[in-house]
Each structure stands twice: as C-alpha cells, then as structure tokens.
Amino acid sequence: MFARWPTGAKLFLILSIALLPLALIAIFATLRVTQIADTELRSHLRVAAAESTRAIAIELVGDMTALRVAVDALQADKGDAPSCARAQGVFAQQSAAGTGFVILDRRGRPICGEPFPGAAAFARQSDPTALSAKIVDNRGLMLRIADRSNRVTAAAWFPAPFLAQISRPSGFAPDYGAALTLGDDRLTLDPLERESALERRESVRNALGINGLMLEMQVRSAPIGSPLLIALVLPLLMWAAAAAISWFVVDRLLIAPLRALRGSIAAYSPGDQPDPAMLRALPAQEIRELGDTFRALSRTVAIHEAGLAEGLVRQTKLTREVHHRVKNNLQVIASLINFHARGARSAEATQAYASIQRRVDALAVVHRYHYAEMEENRGVGLRAVLGELASSIRATAPEGTRVAIVLDVDPFYVTQDVAVAVAFLVTELIELAMVGTPEVQLRLSLKPANEEMRAVLRLSSRALVDDDPLRDRLQHRYGRVIEGLSRQLRSTLQHDPLTGAYEIAIAVTGVE
Image (cartoon, rainbow, N blue to C red; front, side, top):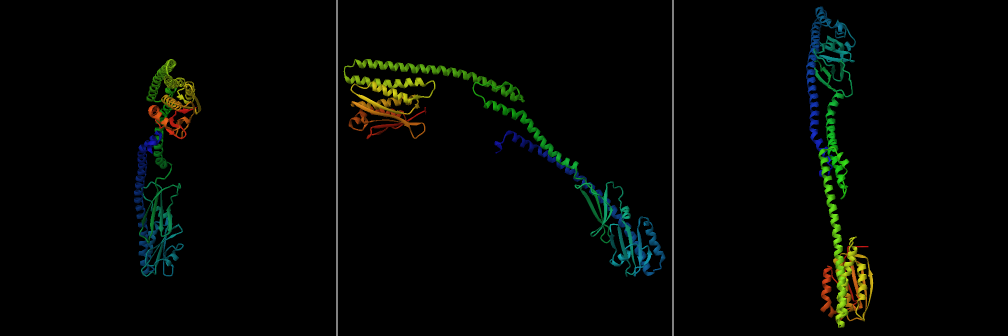
C-alpha cells in the first residue's frame, strides 16, 4: 500500500517521522524544566511551612502552658494574685494584637483576665480532659484548658491577624496563602486569590500538635498560561512546519517539475518537439538537463522516423512494382497457354490447356487485387476476387459446357496467402463439378462464422453430389490438391454428399 502512495505523501510521512523525535525532546525538556521548578518550589514551601508551624505551635503552647500553671494555682487558691499576674504578663505582650484570656470558676464567673464573647459557653462545652480548640467564624482561634477536677477553666482568644503575623516565614519571597484547619472549619490567615482558571498551586499541611489543628500553606506554581502553552505547542508547530516546508520545497523543486516533464513525455508523439520554454522554466538544473536529453532524443527519433517513413515508401513502391510485374507475367503466361491451346490437335489437350489457364488466371486475379489494396493495407477483398474469378471461369469453360454461378459473398478482407488458397480451392471445386457435366449450376457464398474473425466459404452444386465418378475423380486427380489447399487454410473441408456442398472456415482480417 505504501508503494502506491504518491511521492509527495511518502516524503511528508518520512520527514514527519524523522522530525517528530526532535519535537518530543523539546516538549519533554519543557515539561522537565517545569517539573524541576515545581519540585524546587515545593521544597521551599515545605521549609516555610515547617517554620510557620513551629512559630505558631511555640506561641500557642507557651501561652497555654502559662494558663495551665495559673489554672492549677487558682484551683488551689482562688485568691492567688501572683499567678493571675504572671498569666496577664504573658498575654500582655500580644494584647495589642487583640489576644486575650479569661480564667473561670466552676460557675463560669471570671477569676482572672478579661472575658470575651463565647468564652464561657466554649469552656462548658469542651472536653474537660484535653486541650480544646475552636475556630470562630473565620475570625480567630479559641483554646480552652482546665484543671484536673474541671472546676477551674481557662480560655484564650487568638485573632487571625495575630496568628498570620507570627506565622509569617522569614526570607520567603513568593506570595503564599496560609490557613488553620480543624476538621471542616477553616481560619484563613493569609488569603491567596486565584489569578486565572488554569492556575496551579502547591500546598503543604503540617500538624500543630494541638487538638488536631493543622496549618496549610499554598503557593502558586508555574501557571498553565500562554508561555507554558507556547512552550508545549511550539515544538509541535515547528515540527509540522518543518515537515510541510521540506515537502513544499521538494515538491516545487523536484516532484512538480518531474510531473510536468512526465506530462510532456506522455503527450509526445513522433515528430513532435518538447517546448524549449517549458524546459527552461524547470527550477532544478538536473531536471532541465534531463529535459534537454529528452528533447535531443526526440529529435533523433524524429530523424529516424523520417528515415523509416522514407524507407517504407520505397518498400511500398518496390512491392507494388513486384506485384505488378508478377501480375503481368501471369497474364503473359495465360496468353501463351491460350496461344498453344488454339494449336492443340485434340479436345483433351485443349481442355488441359484451358484448365491450366484458369488456374493461372485465378492467381493473377489475386495479385491484381492485392496490388490495388496495398495503399490502404486492408488486405485482399474476397468479394471482388471471387466475382472476377467466377466471370473468368465462365468465359473459359469448355465448349459445350454451360456454367452458371450464383454469388452470395459478404465483403470480407483476407491476407494474400488466404486469398491465393481460396482462389485455387474454388477453381479446383468448379473444375471438379464441370468434368463430364454439360450444364453446371453452382452457388458460392461467404458468410460470417460463429467464431470472431472467421468466415465460412460454401460452394454447392448437384454436380458435386456423391457418386462413383466423383469419388474416382477425387481419388486420381483432384483430391490431393483440394486436401493440400484446405491444410494451407488451416481448416477442415467439410463435404455434404447428399446436397453436393463443400464448406470450409477461413480466417479474415476485417469487413467493409
């Protein structure tokens, strides 16, 4: 199937396969560079997230440790002012950022610190045996701690801006997003807005070790934008363009000129000359040289054709002259036979001369018509040959013998060899019918056969009905000649003994 493809299609396929690895290498390199950049960015993000997680965890754990110490002291002595003061001192440093705490007794009354909204309810609802956390309406974080008997509890408030400030990593240049998550609740510390629908992000989540709190940090990685798309698509475009340009150049410089030269060669006929302007317009020097070679070859062929045509004319004239001389010589022979026949001293000798003359006349008729048909080279027309042959036989019939020949001949053409054999065969059969019969009626027909380029020659007469004299003449005089002529015609001569008909199929070359 590939062998039947046009050369242009084969060339484009080969170039595409050859250049495709280069495009794939370029795409792989682009993806690899992007992957390396993502890996490097993810590594920096992990370092920054670990730093932020550590900073938040240290701050929250330290504050809650101070509250645990104060809770334990106040549980033993609710009037322990120094313990409350120490806790207030710890939170005093962050109070400007909005942090706060409160220590409550069993009834929810404040013992130390400043109450804040939701603190009492959170203290009552939380697990008394562990450090509890709660994200409040994406505004901040509440932590709760109690003594061992759960009679004194403490709650602390850390607003989102404060947590964002202490979680900010040092030396991290890219824009990032940070959020604390607790189950399905989320507290955004630093928002990271989406810049496009195709934006890609790298994210890391670290546990703070406080009641399931997680710190999640995100950064933007290289986006799937115009630069990346161009970097991915450009190698494919360059691959397709390189293959197309290569095919276009080869098609214009090689295939199209060869196609034009092929059309000129296909339209060439003997005697024509290729257009020099068309050959000069071919872009490739090698193809122009090939066209010049074909032009020189066509001139050589034209010269040889002219020589052959001249030789054919001379040969035709020579053949015409030969046939003309043969016809004249046969006519001279026929005249000589006729002259000697008039001087014969017996009727048998006269009949013998007449029989020989009829055979010579048959051969002369064939040569004359072959000579006449040579210009058109159609062959010998049997209708005219058989018609003139029948007239000649009637004219030269023996004295006292009347010959009537009815012709029904289609206009078939045959070669000279077939025409000579047919003329002799018809003459022999008519001679066979005339011997010993004073009045002979014959019917001669030539009709198409069932096979293509074949015709059936049929001669019938009551004089040819099977009897002893006919068999005797066939055995001693006419049989061998008739059999030889049928073999020359490469066919079988059929004889119907009841109707006196002879029939043979002959080869023809055409019909009018």
